[in-house]
Image (cartoon, rainbow, N blue to C red; front, side, top):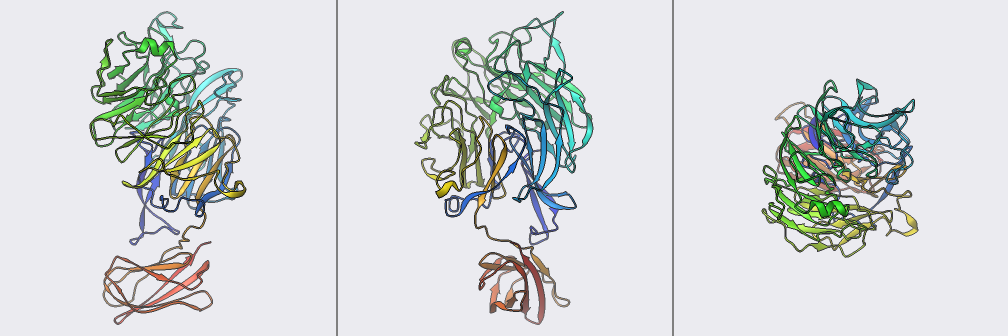
Length: 594
């Protein structure tokens, strides 16, 4: 499952004209299987209303530790005796929270505490290592699949959990992630290379496709003996079905992807591999790899200059972004190069030069102090905000990228990349959202990234500041008019400060005559009506005291269109619309929420 629209009947406040709306869920890292990083179904936030007058900090949800995993979201989900928008947050203290996504109150639907997290001596994650990889949700199955690092009776484990979405209990007994493959590489014993739950570390966002859950693994701080791993588990039983090791006869080759998700074209799995043994058969350091559903390699690309990249710690370290509507994919790394490949024939290894569609060198600064960027793709543009760099945008002509990028001008990241995402309504109203290690959230016009729309440091009196530090590679999530930003001890929620207050949509049908359905929507200073057929309508709307707030005669409706009317001093409460069209009369009641 991914960012999806699921038809559902809703009890309160969100009925469409026919009483059914799509539920917009964010169920995996970067919204979709391709890891585009763009939510193209955002109809509320636009470049016109994201400014200090209209947009800002709403509230924060406190949690018990660092939040590196991207928050997830279920719209109109039946839980706690009602239907709610649910925000799911995971922490490095191995907590999983299900919150009311729209409420500032401390209303936690459930909180599941998994076993004690690991304590690892690695500066990248302190003080504990628990849930780092973004989980994945299957709404129809009713579960969220969570990978957690645990320390139990002084024994280290990596585990996979299937938690019930309604209450956080185990739907299936958790399983330990452990396996070995044939090989003579680092740490091999008797011709087998085994997975080490202490030295290995699961960072990429989980992938769920065709009833299999895929988990990628790398290392802690490149320390000790490690390899890169992919595991495939049955969704229904959590049984391990297949395993892939990136360097079975070598070493290293972490799959970490700066926390970006594993990707899929709905049949196959794509991963990006960091520093490690490369250039020989079956060794996939500094590579992009395509695998079938059982993790058999189908195609790969290995950087021609992998020896130099290894020496300088220039990992390939992003997700493999599948470019929508094409057969191409893109990846980047700490060496500053942007790679464009054919996803079905990635290019292999050519020691004299990369055999790929395009390579743009110096697209971003290099390590140390630079690099590290997970790209986001929207409307034929690739966006990256790398370490020691400004936000950049490369236009795509359907075949290649323009080698000259647009730039935001400022600010620059420090030596860690900002995590970015895009919200848009189809191919319009695009906004690039990004966090910066100076602890601010930024919003740029995606059509022109030199235009800063808003930042959390602009409003007076620190109104919109995050309040807690943002974390490296921890990306915000945008959905349904709100921006959810993970920090060291909370998820901070931003949105419109003065949103149109939408009521439950009242519906009425006349007792006799040609079938007619009407709906009433109330907002802060206006209201609107829609009818199922054309006509000239006489309308009187009264508030809870009987005061007339709207009186209009002969209002023409073409049918299925929304008529906007101006109301006098509308306030939260109950309203009644009395409507006459020809010989028919109907009454609609609706409630304007706070």
